[in-house]
Image 1 (spheres, helix red, strand yellow):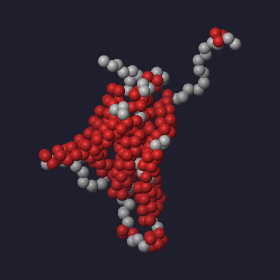
Image 2 (tube, one colour; image 1 turned 45 degrees about the vertical axis):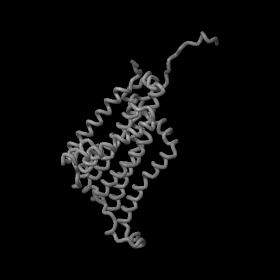
Image 3 (cartoon, rainbow, N blue to C red; image 1 turned 180 degrees about the horizontal axis):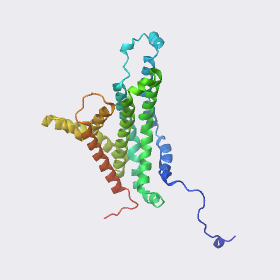
Length: 286
């Protein structure tokens, strides 16, 4: 058949559901992420603490193992609110290391290579693009934060009895909501930095500075003005205050959880605004 006799016919096959189109980005991005051997090492090390926590929970309920190891149960850490709060706080730090490897490169490559027009020329909105990129970071951080945390809670509840879970529901809320608060902050910050800094190493340095420098600034403000409210500019202090409130513990915090929550919401809003400014199908150069 001659070429000119081929008539155009539209695609009539099945279409991807609208709600799941964003998933095409993490499907391919996560595969590329694990090509980094250093990231693989950090990701593997992130499971050491959950493994140690699981062993401690098991030892608390196994008298034979304690006798073999000659460990009195009083020397073991109590499995209480502080135990799981420290778990979330520790895993959040590992999550930050993972984000340093993954987040700063997610958008910068598309901007540097003019890839956004190819994405947005399809039935793919800017919100779906951001959601797809955010899912990459969120999936990796979920794997080392709230998912192992809920498994630890399940193990403790199984060994202790169902009544333990009924009396410690704030721990479930603290592990799940506290982890997701960290995930959202780290994901949005890394994407915003990636959208403005196209060089990967510079983006990682910027993200590191955003999380570290405010701590020093808060310390200076608190020292100069003899107050604790300087910690409102430090995302780490704000997230810790929210974490303590979620677990319902009486640990010392610098600022109230409500004020810390407002600060985090403002930070997320700024990140969302920065992404809305940079995620466009084209860029006008003046």
